[in-house]
Image 1 (cartoon, one colour):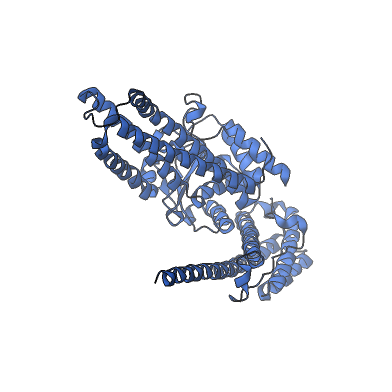
Image 2 (cartoon, chains in turn orange, blue):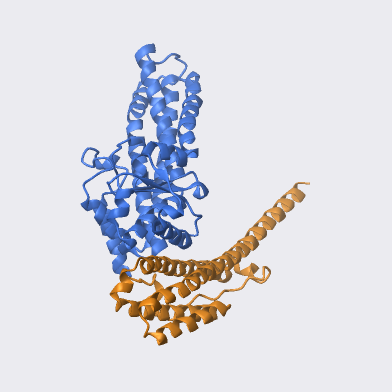
Length: 184
Length: 301
């Protein structure tokens, strides 16, 4: 009787332990999915700002067609990408193109002073920061998951839970790790 | 001060909070032993009475903290359309921290300051004075918001409610004892431990305990401030923003008009005159020390 109780207790504790490890991995994996979805949301928001921004700049700077084209091409790429690597590549390209566009705007004082442009700029800088922070949050989530997948005891359950290491969101420029500071 | 990365600073401050809360628990236990020694077992009814009263007063204000603080500070809730720039900044930090979007409020006051409250991240409220919105640039405000959201994420309203409850129970027990000695002549039953040395020791404990509890409560508050600074850097990865925000606060001599001590601890910069309160009882670490710690984090980047 006593031994059955002891054995039963041990089995119960083990079951609780297994469930806890399994659930932890699943939770971390879902957190990575959510974090990636957040990056996509923010990139989409940035893409939505672009037509407006390009139109506003065009109103003042008519001779900068190549810059506009670069932004529009980069935007088209960014809106169709879906894998982590593609999204991050398109995102980097678009960031570069936008910098070019804002550099162009620097040369037109009337444009810089317009209320429309200033509110677009503010929206763009907050969106850039949101993109950067969602990348940072995604990478932190991936770091937690990958650590769990590689360390004892969670690593024993990774196969069973069908959870594997995930890809970090790399930004092509090393200096771009922090929020890109779009200063006006 | 040694150079700390924000991760080290976070875990060190968390450890110190647990340690201080542990001491607080030990102090409560010591007070209970003392009161039993001094008044005998029949006095045991005081304890649930004191705990009950304190729980009702502190936990009421903890549970309704977001609404209560609004009325106590005169802060007004705002919508996204009222200040899109501020909302954008707060949204940035919610993304960086993974916390839900808090309620945002404004206090009409020219002194630059800010605070966070709410019983949990889902009921969080962060407020800014009009002064801080005028005085700070984007990066500085981002640092301030990150500090406030760090309080939310670290559940500092809960931590300070626990500290206030314990300190309150100790103060109330000690107060009841003093009144009993005054009016009732002290010990009522003689079945308790008659050792005179023990009696004197417990009396001393009961007299000093409320002061010690206040000091512990302030020490916990200071550790939570340092922790919030470190967590803010974990959110923004930009110690310079918060550092220069604190420099603006340090250079500014105006203080928030209403000086209600009841809510003094929740502001980012203490609204009470720092010279009037000794360092042992201060709710915030010296601002220069906080600036120095952040500067040390900057040099690591």
